Length: 359
Image 1 (cartoon, one colour):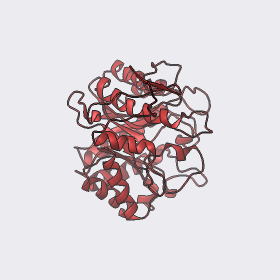
Image 2 (tube, one colour):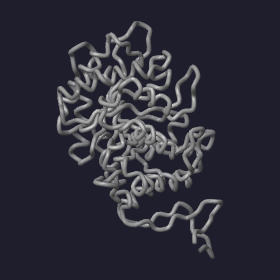
Image 3 (tube, helix red, strand yellow):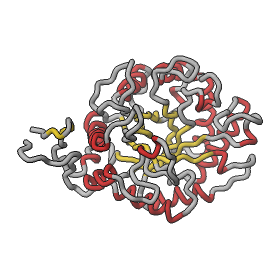
Image 4 (cartoon, helix red, strand yellow):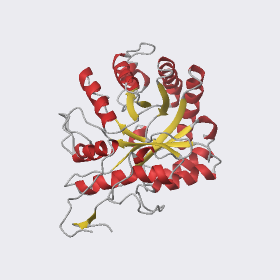
């Protein structure tokens, strides 16, 4: 029987390292979004990856901005990406690389770094191919773009599933030409119910990608699975954004003949900002996050990894983003980090204090 404290149940002691419960032929599934993009000091990258391993993570999702690496056409600066890739590889972390952010030379003056028109799809593909070639054997998954179903992420233009499908096709062919062994991952879509000027419902967007012929041009699908205020076992519903919405994304894949493809949850988690309307309490955040890993391991064999957003920020954002992290800017672990670390070490995890007489 579970004991309730302030409405929160204590978690029963989990089996040792439950995040490695296999689904099909999967190995460990726990991952983290590093967010080391703007971290310039090597020792901080090294410490971050050490602590990721310490919390039991086997996967690292990292963002590699095109604009940082290729500031001029054909001129590459790999120094920062080399640091991140080397740190991940030396610690056995499986690296999922997200590639986007348009350099100035590949977009109109005055446009945002999310603006990529079809005249420059081939330039993006050339960059992605160079990235795939350089990191062959060290980066096995490359994500093409990010949340193109949001107007913001599509350069403040109306979202366009057919155009994104063309970008995906162009990048896929170039990446596979450079490194046939790498997996090309279709972008994680923002989980949203929007059908207006700011975006398009992720389920509708994905179906329109299939309608536009996307199926042959990606090996895996990225999913963004946030829970907001709902627990991970809250049932999926087309009119609700919750963690289980991933099941509806999977239904779209199956309906379009992609039952054999795996998914990667490249962003996930709960937020514990005391002032944000989509946040939960810190103990709930820990409880929900641990349960989400178990749910994926035990119930979703089609998901290869679940990566939480995010490990750490290089500096405080002074808004709700600070409350998604696992450790503080100075690397002080938060309770959620300690809970994952305890679980990785085989210790029982409790998310609320025991009370006298609890059952």
